[in-house]
Length: 259
Image (cartoon, rainbow, N blue to C red; front, side, top):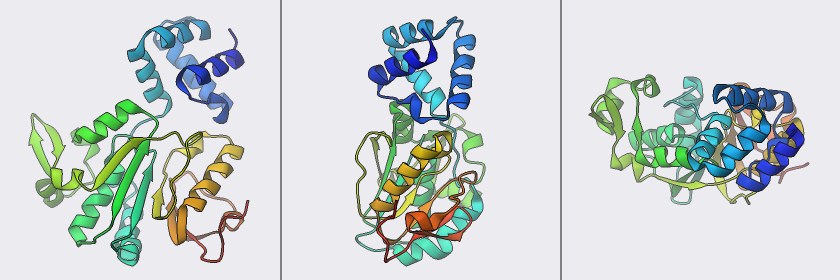
Protein backbone atom coordinates (compact mmCIF):
# COMPACT_ATOMS: atom_id res chain seq x y z
CA UNK A 1 0.00 0.00 0.00
CA UNK A 2 1.52 3.36 -1.01
CA UNK A 3 0.86 6.69 0.70
CA UNK A 4 -1.85 7.78 -1.76
CA UNK A 5 -3.88 4.62 -1.15
CA UNK A 6 -3.32 4.98 2.59
CA UNK A 7 -4.63 8.56 2.53
CA UNK A 8 -7.79 7.52 0.70
CA UNK A 9 -8.51 4.64 3.07
CA UNK A 10 -7.85 6.74 6.17
CA UNK A 11 -10.25 9.39 4.86
CA UNK A 12 -12.98 6.76 4.50
CA UNK A 13 -12.21 5.15 7.86
CA UNK A 14 -11.84 8.13 10.20
CA UNK A 15 -12.96 11.14 8.08
CA UNK A 16 -9.50 12.70 8.28
CA UNK A 17 -8.36 14.09 4.93
CA UNK A 18 -4.57 13.78 4.99
CA UNK A 19 -4.45 15.22 1.48
CA UNK A 20 -5.34 18.63 2.92
CA UNK A 21 -2.15 18.73 4.98
CA UNK A 22 1.34 19.58 3.77
CA UNK A 23 2.40 16.24 2.35
CA UNK A 24 6.10 16.15 3.23
CA UNK A 25 5.50 17.16 6.83
CA UNK A 26 2.53 14.83 7.35
CA UNK A 27 4.13 11.82 5.66
CA UNK A 28 7.24 12.25 7.82
CA UNK A 29 5.15 12.29 10.99
CA UNK A 30 3.26 9.16 9.93
CA UNK A 31 6.47 7.29 9.09
CA UNK A 32 7.79 8.22 12.53
CA UNK A 33 4.62 6.77 14.06
CA UNK A 34 5.00 3.56 12.03
CA UNK A 35 8.59 3.14 13.21
CA UNK A 36 7.72 3.92 16.82
CA UNK A 37 5.03 1.22 16.88
CA UNK A 38 6.91 -1.32 14.73
CA UNK A 39 4.15 -1.44 12.13
CA UNK A 40 6.51 -1.87 9.14
CA UNK A 41 4.53 0.04 6.51
CA UNK A 42 1.33 1.97 5.65
CA UNK A 43 -0.64 -1.27 5.28
CA UNK A 44 0.37 -2.35 8.77
CA UNK A 45 -0.69 0.98 10.20
CA UNK A 46 -4.02 0.96 8.38
CA UNK A 47 -4.82 -2.54 9.65
CA UNK A 48 -4.06 -1.38 13.18
CA UNK A 49 -6.29 1.68 12.77
CA UNK A 50 -9.09 -0.51 11.46
CA UNK A 51 -8.97 -3.06 14.28
CA UNK A 52 -7.77 -1.15 17.36
CA UNK A 53 -9.91 1.83 18.41
CA UNK A 54 -7.44 2.86 21.12
CA UNK A 55 -4.60 3.01 18.62
CA UNK A 56 -6.86 4.97 16.27
CA UNK A 57 -7.54 7.58 18.96
CA UNK A 58 -3.85 7.88 19.83
CA UNK A 59 -2.97 8.26 16.14
CA UNK A 60 -5.49 11.08 15.63
CA UNK A 61 -4.22 12.81 18.76
CA UNK A 62 -0.65 12.51 17.47
CA UNK A 63 -1.47 13.93 14.04
CA UNK A 64 -3.53 16.84 15.33
CA UNK A 65 -0.64 17.88 17.60
CA UNK A 66 -2.65 18.53 20.74
CA UNK A 67 -0.25 20.51 22.88
CA UNK A 68 -1.49 23.51 24.78
CA UNK A 69 -1.17 25.52 27.95
CA UNK A 70 -2.99 28.41 29.59
CA UNK A 71 -2.41 31.96 28.33
CA UNK A 72 -0.13 30.83 25.51
CA UNK A 73 1.41 33.88 23.80
CA UNK A 74 0.97 36.33 26.66
CA UNK A 75 0.91 39.43 24.45
CA UNK A 76 -2.15 38.09 22.64
CA UNK A 77 -4.05 37.72 25.90
CA UNK A 78 -2.94 41.15 27.05
CA UNK A 79 -4.45 42.66 23.87
CA UNK A 80 -7.60 40.60 24.31
CA UNK A 81 -7.98 41.88 27.85
CA UNK A 82 -7.19 45.52 27.17
CA UNK A 83 -8.83 46.07 23.77
CA UNK A 84 -10.98 43.28 22.37
CA UNK A 85 -13.00 41.86 25.25
CA UNK A 86 -14.12 45.28 26.59
CA UNK A 87 -15.20 46.31 23.08
CA UNK A 88 -17.23 43.18 22.28
CA UNK A 89 -18.67 42.18 25.66
CA UNK A 90 -22.46 42.05 25.76
CA UNK A 91 -25.47 39.78 26.09
CA UNK A 92 -25.22 38.60 22.46
CA UNK A 93 -21.43 38.18 22.29
CA UNK A 94 -20.21 34.83 20.96
CA UNK A 95 -16.65 33.49 20.99
CA UNK A 96 -15.31 30.41 19.21
CA UNK A 97 -12.08 28.59 20.05
CA UNK A 98 -11.47 26.36 17.01
CA UNK A 99 -9.01 23.51 17.39
CA UNK A 100 -9.26 23.93 21.15
CA UNK A 101 -7.25 20.80 22.01
CA UNK A 102 -7.42 20.12 25.77
CA UNK A 103 -9.34 23.30 26.55
CA UNK A 104 -6.60 25.59 27.88
CA UNK A 105 -7.41 28.34 25.37
CA UNK A 106 -11.19 28.65 25.89
CA UNK A 107 -10.75 28.31 29.65
CA UNK A 108 -8.14 31.11 29.53
CA UNK A 109 -10.73 33.31 27.81
CA UNK A 110 -13.34 32.33 30.40
CA UNK A 111 -10.97 33.28 33.23
CA UNK A 112 -10.37 36.69 31.63
CA UNK A 113 -14.11 37.26 31.38
CA UNK A 114 -14.66 36.31 35.02
CA UNK A 115 -11.74 38.39 36.25
CA UNK A 116 -12.95 41.50 34.44
CA UNK A 117 -16.67 40.85 34.99
CA UNK A 118 -17.34 40.88 31.24
CA UNK A 119 -20.70 39.31 30.38
CA UNK A 120 -21.15 37.43 27.10
CA UNK A 121 -23.60 34.96 25.60
CA UNK A 122 -21.32 31.95 25.07
CA UNK A 123 -17.91 30.47 24.38
CA UNK A 124 -17.90 27.42 22.14
CA UNK A 125 -14.80 25.27 21.78
CA UNK A 126 -14.31 22.64 19.11
CA UNK A 127 -11.79 20.03 18.05
CA UNK A 128 -11.68 17.00 15.76
CA UNK A 129 -10.12 14.81 18.46
CA UNK A 130 -12.67 13.27 20.83
CA UNK A 131 -10.03 12.28 23.39
CA UNK A 132 -8.84 15.88 23.63
CA UNK A 133 -12.42 17.07 24.08
CA UNK A 134 -12.92 14.61 26.94
CA UNK A 135 -9.79 15.97 28.61
CA UNK A 136 -11.04 19.52 28.05
CA UNK A 137 -14.41 18.75 29.62
CA UNK A 138 -12.68 17.06 32.58
CA UNK A 139 -10.53 20.17 33.06
CA UNK A 140 -7.60 18.50 34.82
CA UNK A 141 -4.11 19.79 34.05
CA UNK A 142 -0.44 19.21 34.85
CA UNK A 143 1.84 21.87 36.32
CA UNK A 144 3.60 22.53 32.97
CA UNK A 145 0.24 23.48 31.45
CA UNK A 146 -0.48 26.25 33.96
CA UNK A 147 2.98 27.86 34.11
CA UNK A 148 1.68 31.18 32.72
CA UNK A 149 -0.93 31.57 35.47
CA UNK A 150 -0.13 33.82 38.45
CA UNK A 151 -0.73 32.31 41.91
CA UNK A 152 -3.82 34.47 42.47
CA UNK A 153 -5.60 32.97 39.45
CA UNK A 154 -4.54 29.47 40.38
CA UNK A 155 -6.05 29.92 43.82
CA UNK A 156 -9.31 31.38 42.51
CA UNK A 157 -9.98 29.06 39.59
CA UNK A 158 -8.25 25.74 40.33
CA UNK A 159 -8.29 23.07 42.99
CA UNK A 160 -5.11 21.04 43.49
CA UNK A 161 -5.64 17.29 43.90
CA UNK A 162 -2.67 14.88 43.87
CA UNK A 163 -0.47 17.46 42.12
CA UNK A 164 -3.04 17.90 39.35
CA UNK A 165 -4.87 21.17 38.75
CA UNK A 166 -8.67 20.81 38.48
CA UNK A 167 -10.40 23.81 36.98
CA UNK A 168 -13.40 24.95 38.99
CA UNK A 169 -17.00 24.69 37.83
CA UNK A 170 -17.38 28.46 37.68
CA UNK A 171 -14.98 28.36 34.71
CA UNK A 172 -16.28 25.13 33.20
CA UNK A 173 -19.79 26.53 32.98
CA UNK A 174 -18.58 29.27 30.63
CA UNK A 175 -17.54 26.89 27.82
CA UNK A 176 -19.46 24.49 25.58
CA UNK A 177 -17.33 21.80 23.88
CA UNK A 178 -18.21 19.72 20.85
CA UNK A 179 -16.54 17.82 18.02
CA UNK A 180 -16.02 19.68 14.76
CA UNK A 181 -14.00 18.93 11.63
CA UNK A 182 -12.75 22.19 10.13
CA UNK A 183 -12.38 20.57 6.72
CA UNK A 184 -15.81 19.01 6.34
CA UNK A 185 -18.32 20.34 8.87
CA UNK A 186 -20.36 23.55 8.42
CA UNK A 187 -19.27 26.62 10.37
CA UNK A 188 -21.65 28.45 12.69
CA UNK A 189 -22.12 32.16 12.01
CA UNK A 190 -22.30 35.31 14.08
CA UNK A 191 -19.13 35.31 16.16
CA UNK A 192 -17.52 38.41 17.64
CA UNK A 193 -14.20 36.65 18.21
CA UNK A 194 -12.70 33.48 16.67
CA UNK A 195 -9.41 31.98 17.79
CA UNK A 196 -7.77 29.33 15.63
CA UNK A 197 -4.14 29.17 16.68
CA UNK A 198 -1.41 26.76 15.63
CA UNK A 199 -3.90 24.67 13.64
CA UNK A 200 -4.04 25.57 9.97
CA UNK A 201 -0.30 26.07 9.60
CA UNK A 202 -0.17 22.31 8.95
CA UNK A 203 -2.54 22.55 5.97
CA UNK A 204 -1.67 23.30 2.35
CA UNK A 205 -1.85 26.93 1.26
CA UNK A 206 -5.06 26.24 -0.70
CA UNK A 207 -6.76 24.75 2.34
CA UNK A 208 -5.49 27.57 4.54
CA UNK A 209 -7.13 30.12 2.23
CA UNK A 210 -10.41 28.20 2.27
CA UNK A 211 -10.41 27.97 6.05
CA UNK A 212 -9.61 31.66 6.52
CA UNK A 213 -12.48 32.60 4.23
CA UNK A 214 -14.86 30.37 6.19
CA UNK A 215 -13.73 31.87 9.48
CA UNK A 216 -14.19 35.40 8.13
CA UNK A 217 -17.67 34.49 6.89
CA UNK A 218 -18.46 33.29 10.42
CA UNK A 219 -17.48 36.62 11.99
CA UNK A 220 -19.80 39.52 12.55
CA UNK A 221 -18.74 42.81 10.93
CA UNK A 222 -15.81 44.21 12.95
CA UNK A 223 -15.28 40.80 14.55
CA UNK A 224 -11.78 39.61 15.45
CA UNK A 225 -9.79 36.62 14.20
CA UNK A 226 -6.76 35.40 16.17
CA UNK A 227 -4.14 33.06 14.68
CA UNK A 228 -0.93 31.45 15.93
CA UNK A 229 2.47 33.10 16.04
CA UNK A 230 3.64 31.18 12.94
CA UNK A 231 0.44 31.77 10.96
CA UNK A 232 0.90 35.23 9.50
CA UNK A 233 -1.81 36.03 6.94
CA UNK A 234 0.29 37.47 4.10
CA UNK A 235 -2.40 39.57 2.44
CA UNK A 236 -5.30 40.02 4.86
CA UNK A 237 -7.07 42.46 2.53
CA UNK A 238 -7.88 39.56 0.22
CA UNK A 239 -10.07 38.12 2.97
CA UNK A 240 -11.63 41.38 4.13
CA UNK A 241 -9.32 41.53 7.15
CA UNK A 242 -7.06 44.18 8.66
CA UNK A 243 -4.15 43.37 10.94
CA UNK A 244 -4.61 45.21 14.24
CA UNK A 245 -1.97 43.59 16.46
CA UNK A 246 0.40 40.64 16.76
CA UNK A 247 -1.51 37.58 15.49
CA UNK A 248 -4.82 39.50 15.54
CA UNK A 249 -6.98 40.60 12.61
CA UNK A 250 -10.28 42.45 12.39
CA UNK A 251 -13.00 41.94 9.81
CA UNK A 252 -13.72 45.13 7.91
CA UNK A 253 -17.30 46.20 8.34
CA UNK A 254 -17.90 46.73 4.60
CA UNK A 255 -16.52 43.32 3.62
CA UNK A 256 -18.19 39.93 3.74
CA UNK A 257 -15.11 38.01 2.62
CA UNK A 258 -13.59 38.43 -0.80
CA UNK A 259 -12.13 35.19 -2.11
